[in-house]
Length: 447
Ligand code: ATP
Ligand code: MG
Image: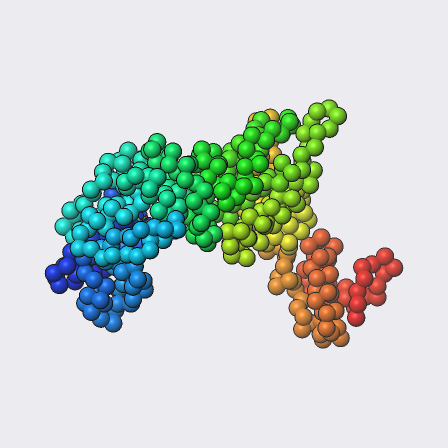
């Protein structure tokens, strides 16, 4: 793949001023393996102040202490970082100091994995002192240098390694894999926000389930709740797998979207705490969705997830085991509460959950097909399931003499009746309903 024009222009400007300049890191890895790089980073021998001077008003000092200057171009921002050697790591997190160097190979040596430690220049020359290209061809993740030392310097690399394995479908070289397990406790020193970033890039990965299966104890450092699922025998004919294996099979069956993967990973996390055995020796997990929800909420808060994301996931976790009857009314009710996006997500989670169960019980797929068909039809028919679709609004009700909280309450009541099919979503019908004297058995309404 060719280096984009705007990035080439930045490299050219640096070279024309007598500096060395290379594309480095993830973009080289992705370009060499035919993936589309998300962003192109540059490394240069120029000192940050030299880069600043060279690009003038287009340059912004976005990370000067690390030697990073961001150059604005028409094709988007390009980060230029001065070749750097990291000083001693004293806290498993960050180097005490960084020193600039004029050697690109020294800069590559500080990088985490061989496939991330290559550089490419304008003439297509590849700088690859650690055999990154060969590892890339073989689909292998290997630390640059001694893996124990590298993971002790910065424990986030442990999770980055698993993230690249899951996203790229790579195997982890045995020495790197062993060191990654050995040094996992170092993750305790890493800020939860940084763990979240890497973990959330891992979950949508193609081989996320396989990586979780192979390294549960690593994820258990920040989410010990997962470990309770590992090997937990369900003692129930619906299940041919223990809770963890079931979860991983479901994870494999759900699309690689973060919300779906996170929900699926957590949907049964409360099962071990709910387990009961009946007289016949059959296992049950009564109330597990609520417990799963509670645990999931705690786990997501621990990683400092955004509130909106957390709320979406825990709601889907709570709903995952509810039956959605295949009727217009039930689907409209679910739409009212969840909205279209989350109801579609719920169906996908339920499909995956069912695919993770014993083969004889996978017939649920047809029920979900039916629910989905009804959902599609209702949306096509513009079925009413939200206040903004209701044929009357607050102003109509004010005109009828309602005021204050009674307006909202009346709107909700009308919506409930429309959703349940008791009233048509027509203005006259809705207004007439409100003006009609209350029947003895009718709902309550305050004026
Ligand atoms: P992505 O495509 O997801 O951005 P990436 O490899 O570009 O992947 P970044 O986090 O953007 O990952 O980091 C850019 C480069 O910086 C990496 O390729 C690697 O060379 C280096 N790097 C990043 N984080 C570390 C780290 N913790 N330790 C050592 N090198 C790192
Ligand atoms: Mg990157």
